[in-house]
Length: 409
Image 1 (cartoon, one colour):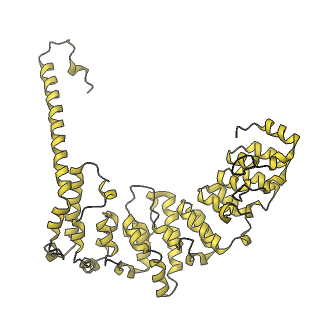
Image 2 (cartoon, rainbow, N blue to C red; image 1 turned 90 degrees about the vertical axis):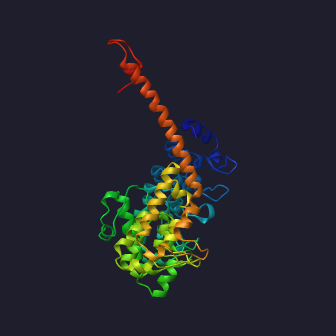
Image 3 (cartoon, one colour; image 1 turned 135 degrees about the vertical axis):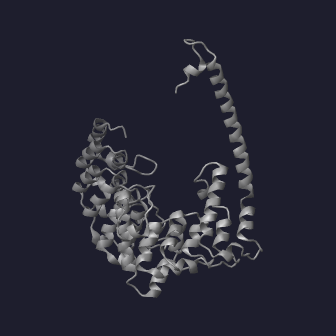
């Protein structure tokens, strides 16, 4: 671990068995430890002295090459592979390939190297779909696209969680903030404001969806519904890019509803996803029909806007007063979409949207008032201090140091 090459070679010179002996409680050998510690010169020295130790495994069944894959240091993996080109195909813990391990850690350079040296005939379709979905999970979208382009059938397979690659994309929001595309620039593929990652995600989404919609209508329905309804998860997360790509090629998705009778726009209202909700303005007269949907409790879209936002969305703005302001603005925005009679419509509990809003936001209103009061008091105190300093400075003779003169402008 300290990189003491001379000490390691001194021990190896007395008995090579030490290099093949587990020296930790997990059964890791010197090569395992050197690879994990990213000690390139130790790995080179030991592997050249005793290449046979490369195939030794720890108690989990992982070779030192698996540790190299996890380390992300390509030079270590290359050194080992030159000594034994079968290492990339030897599975480790839980039967996982070194390639899959590197993907799970998001080591892009290592993954591209292992894709070159791993024998593809040794991989099963299950291996490939696991690697594909894991690549999406760890933001290796370029790797995912490469794998998919060479194995088109993977678009229809499911991993151990029962998810297709499309599901992995649906629950994977873009990291880059401030990206607010319209439906049209997404259609045209114009996402330069969001950089390379946006382009890769959109390209992968379009490619996957193009393959999926070539199937029968029943198969498409199953694909987006099992093991969970990816449309509504994407809407809850604000995946406007993802949803727009799907809707463009398959407009019927606009009419889809979940078990509560909610469309993606209803989900957007509940979860305060502004960009998803904005799309309703771009679908023309269809919005007038979708806005009439009600759930089993007779709640219309404005009732949903009346409910308190989920905590993770409410906390996007700090301070109860500003949160209350945002909630009021959201209520008014949705109010413009629904028909006028819906603003006074009652749900099963005989509550109008406004009555429900007042009830749901009563605590937030009180906290907002308290916050405003404390803020006002603090401002009044600061104003009084400033007035005192200015008043004092006004009556000082020229050249006399005052507190006001010491305050930076």
